[in-house]
Image 1 (cartoon, rainbow, N blue to C red):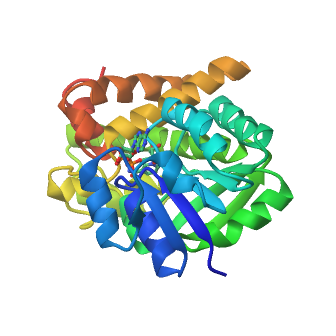
Image 2 (tube, rainbow, N blue to C red):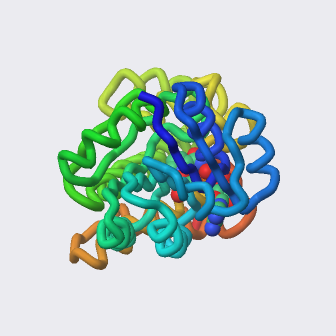
Length: 295
Ligand code: NAD
């Protein structure tokens, strides 16, 4: 079924996601503050509107892919007034509380709403192979699912409003902590005279096996496709990992959950991402740890 989709936020993720919706046959009208993002999206079949409000005025589905919670909440005030009876789908990574406020804003204005953050990064957005984690009612999920399936390989209904964001920050906390654990293992192995390849050959087929080791290995050599082999060009930027771990740490404070490693990982990534490390792939934290601690 062809849908009229308004897409706001056509950056690294939103641009290719909008292009995949066009490929799937939907009529996509988009907007981004950045002229370069607008030009690129236009070249991929997105009709560019003069403003965010204009992009969603006729839309049956309103999609947003924005940097952070404040952008989503600011825009939702405007967009929920401009659209009439639409399904609002926010794919940005934001705090669980902000996602619930955004959904309330949409519902109060007579719309339906889900939070649907993603995993898979820019390559997954380009390939249409993202994983979506969705928070909303059964009816809202059923409506969002076919739209999201045009941009991803897996769409999981995680629960009510905010549950998608909860799954996202829990998953990325596993990733951040495990990347630090894998990096520390390589640093200790170096001190003990163990080659990277020997440690990889053992741990990748033993109980140390995990995605941080086998897909995004933080040292060059064992996994040719990992960013470590190209001077840690992202990939998934350390600044984004710092942001996601910050959301997890804030959620822990809000809920009283005690996260010994999650909070420490948030501190280490915040410190690493403050300097030049922020734009590097998050596996580059191994260099900070090798030099005597990232913080
Ligand atoms: P990005 O900075 O490339 O894109 C965000 C876009 O939003 C920018 O082009 C910006 O101009 C636009 N924007 C901001 N405010 C706007 C406004 N008021 N109106 C219109 N456009 C506006 O960021 P990204 O890498 O595409 O990430 C987007 C979201 O996806 C973030 O929440 C991020 O955490 C999440 N995410 C990113 C990745 C990744 O690998 N890049 C992976 C998973 C999730």
